[in-house]
Length: 150
Image (cartoon, rainbow, N blue to C red; front, side, top):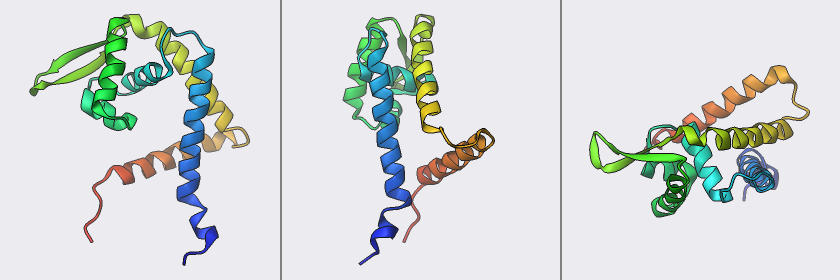
């Protein structure tokens, strides 16, 4: 049986951090008036960060089912914040992008993201922020790589 301390370290801490960041982000989103649901605002933030991505890839990155993201995008498209265009390499796929009308709302969401980041980084010296970001990106890239064969 693994030791309790070994189990309660890196992986579970990362899971906790992800959950807490999302909760703080969603709590802050509720406080601003974007005219969007929290889920739509989160989807808009993902489109902002990942322009010209297929709907299915967007759903995967968001950790939701493709039909769920379609619902979010329907609302965002009605609001005039996103467009969906046919992917030239696959007519069945749709690429998602922001419109200029989304800029003010994206700015509000970005302010929330920056505030949550500032909350999370309290007590970490500023000169270490870039190193931490680099390490987290490396971890993400490692986990995005295909799983090794046994």
